Length: 86
Image (cartoon, rainbow, N blue to C red; front, side):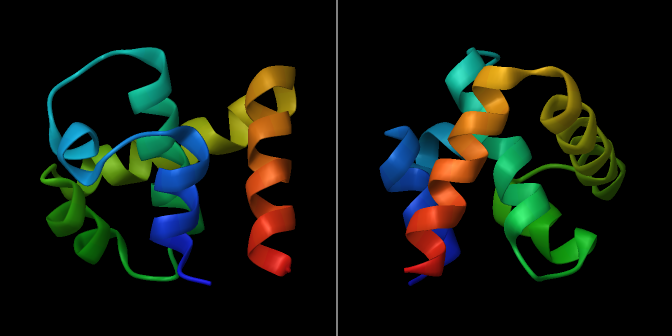
């Protein structure tokens, strides 16, 4: 299944929301998960999300930290991966 579609559907966000400048937690979490999950370059993710390449690098670092320290984020990530693996 398409990683982008799985994350958007599971988190209940749209691509337009992801590309917006929203700082709402569910939107920023979705951006962070997309940056970490998509098997494409930082530059390609930046184009998709409408942000800079350094911002994507920061999202990928943040993803690792959230997996370690944020139980709620980790549970969402694991749920997405279980759907993705099906």
